[in-house]
Image (cartoon, rainbow, N blue to C red):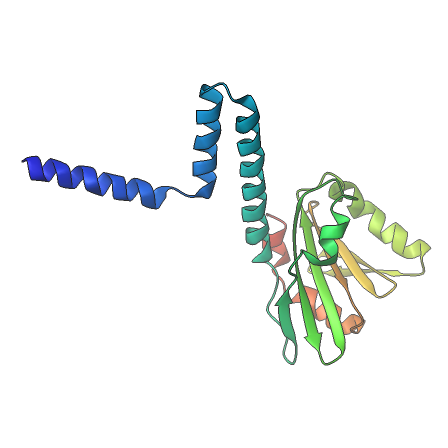
Length: 187
């Protein structure tokens, strides 16, 4: 009987260790610091836990980036690409991007979600395109704007899709058409 209890306790500890991850460990550290009266350490842990969640959200957003079209290669943008630089302008959020190459041609596809500015951008894109000599387009029933060789649109009122680079408009359009925009709109 004693061995069975020891074995059960050991298995419980193994299950708990397997279930633990950096996020939950950080939250538990924040609680411990709070209970010990170290509010500063608790705040640091909570801020770090927020960064971990943002990273997890970016990873789930990156799943919407399509594979490379035939004849192209795909590279993950190591630093979030151009979209990461735009995050401050859009008031924060979640970003994922990839670079596509075919010889000397490039396309960078960026997705920005969970940003307070994105909702307002949807209606403005076609107006901005018209003022700049661009043109509105529809892809999978979503409005996009082509302006200065950049293709941009807001999907589901909350995810901005942007394709830049020196590839042709047809290649950029085909890249966006290969995405599941309906599922992206539910992100």
